[in-house]
Image (cartoon, rainbow, N blue to C red; front, side, top):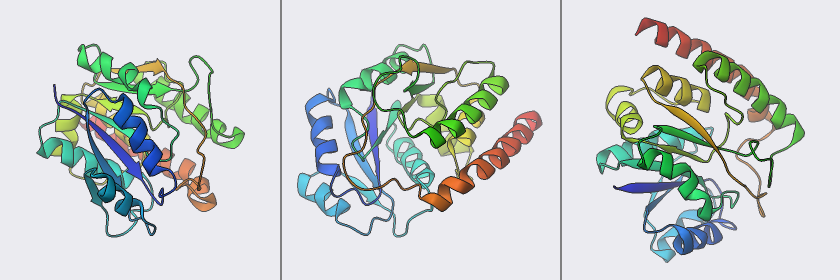
Amino acid sequence: MKILVAVIAYNEEKNIANTLDDLARNNCGYDIVVIDNGSSDNTHGICEKLGVPYLRHCINTGSPYGTVRSYFDYAGKYNYDIICQFDGDGQHIASELPKIIDPVKNNVADFVIGSRFLQKKGFKSSFLRRIGINLFSFINSSITGRKISDTTSGFKAYGKNVIDYFYKTYKNEIYDINQILLLSFFNGARIMEVPIVMKAREHGASEFNFFRSAAFPVKGLINIMGCLLQGKAR
């Protein structure tokens, strides 16, 4: 099976080399591509120096979810069977990848979320962000009928039918994880959570600044309502 690890990055020049080194030592032969979301630093230069393929957005898309459209298109174009989202800030651990890949590889699930809260180990985000995580996890659990504890986790794996759906069928913009999750569910994806461990970032700041974080709940609710309307119209 062709497996791609898409590393999403924005101004991660202080983290990207260590992230790519971790993947090189632990990725078991998976292909890697870095999606640089319009960084103003030398993130792409480090990728080039290390010989790692990268796609560079000419401008920042306003949130990490602009990178999702890019990696679905990349995976679809090059006919990958599985794609994993892996953050370039050093929070994700390459040795944890099999936990999210194996359920897809073994045809148990189509959409796997690595949850920080199932075993309650490692870094779990700030208190305020956990309020938002719990809110959207509850809403998405209610809609899908599946227990979801970490909706906003960036550590995910998607199977072929999810890749093909977003590459061939759904051509609109992608704004947040609720949209990806619910549209995949309405398209028949089997959704599953597995326990994983994350680390705190060592350098830099999240792409979600204060204003983007404040707008996130509003945008999330709007996206959920839109997905419900699309789901009912199917």
